[in-house]
Image 1 (tube, rainbow, N blue to C red):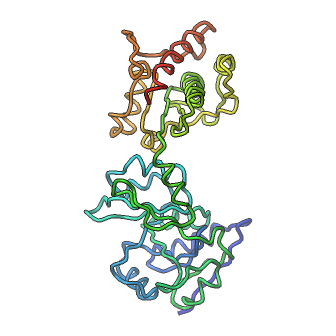
Image 2: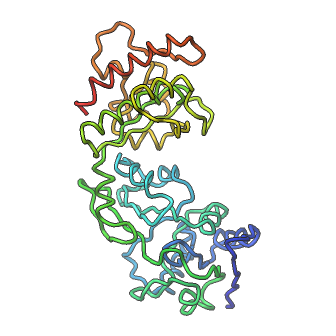
Length: 353
């Protein structure tokens, strides 16, 4: 068998070449592809003949499992179950990138490894293949992982159907592997991401403020809490905000920026973002402004029920109306009253989180 080699230039990627590689994988073939860490051999994990062939050419023991490579963060839910907050924290920070996480499989009682490579060629091929892709390093088992195309092809020329020549990889260090099926999480292999970075990310408490447009109320809360935590010397808490209905990348309202500036807080660089399932699920505490927000958050991610609260409720403010109304388009004094309510709540909760 002759291996077809396609040379790829990252400055001028031709999708037809990647589509051809994807078709080979979908049809049960083996394709050497680049990732940011090392070169790998991409294959359809659900094709038994393909997997037998892959194991044979790599001379890999049958008991060793392969990790799945995925093209989007949200695809972890296609492969895994009982996904921890820690898993979402790690993928939010390090994906796409050199991190493999081990989770409980959604198919049986085994575990599954998942990685989202930081390489546009690899991601596009995986997306176009539309199969469950594994991509172990392109080396004989026990040999060094290949850092460039010549190293990747030398043992497999004529044994794989296609190979993508993209020169040298970006990192040249294998991914870090973290087992999140145990508590505390266990680092199985330290690679490009160091142990301390993993541990710091897992230990950090994530607090998310949610409102409608992520341009006023949640921004006020984010700015105020960040300032308060800085005054308390707290570096173990990460504060962010998001909106349920918003224009992506919008700035905070001028009224919000003005009110925050009086407190010595500069949020001029803030840009609105969507309250996605992944963002919600990585948060240890979700604080919303209205009951309607709470309902919508729980529709997106029902499993966070015990982590979502109305801001005034969590701050234990004795008020029959726990909603904090939207000041957008309202008079200046309404903005000021809204800001005062949020500031009172933040003052109360800063020392308790």
